[in-house]
Image (cartoon, rainbow, N blue to C red; front, side, top):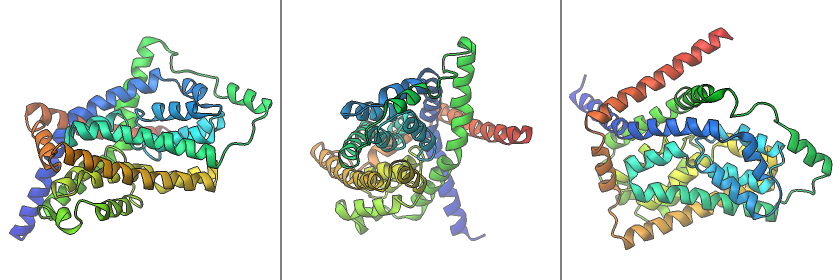
Length: 353
């Protein structure tokens, strides 16, 4: 085999392993928190606060959505259930906007690879996008008045079961199963694909590639939006790709556009939204993502320039270095083992069915 190819494979593999060590402790902690959230935040509690009209259901939907570890496909059945239970169009749209863009796991991974600025700014952008999109949906495509019968049916639906049944041991078991079995099943493939893409970008592209060809302004953001829309990428998997592109000269604002537009514009999500809420609401949804992701990108670039923030190569290297010790290596091995166990149990459960 040609030595150039060997060197390329070695470099790509090294970049992937470094990213894995950096992400693993935060991702494992995020899985644990996600499992706890899945048990102690009952779906009925969520539904109870998202019905009715006005801005408060929209704001609550965004607040509920930001920490929940649901990808753009996983959020669809939850949003459909909320809608069926009586959630307004605005609240449903707000939930669909804010949820797939972030989550406790992706926030921690964002901090590990991109630093505290992104870890704070990204969920704030998702929250603002959810509120803006939900309020616009209520204004431009409001719900028809609900009848008393509809309200009774909505309040009685999904009344069986509950997150708090089964005692403490049962709740711990369900939390750990969701956090370390169910959630890794959904995230393993896209996260590993994201790390592979990041490794290839780092090995293939020369330094300052994006800065030299796209610059820091509007063009780079438009290109990132166009690239992110047709590609399925979850909130956590998008982070290593964004970090790799920033190390090659992509501006923080353009990276933010990729981080918020990619997870929220999956074709399945848009199709489901169209079916649930109608074409007008779907158009408002897409317009909100397009406009506010660009606004957020320009704002982040302005903040970075004002604070003399490095172009993200420094923060990414700084946080990547923290994963190079023995703890990062152990966490990476554990993470890969969790992914493996999750897949094995998936096939075993299929055989039992």
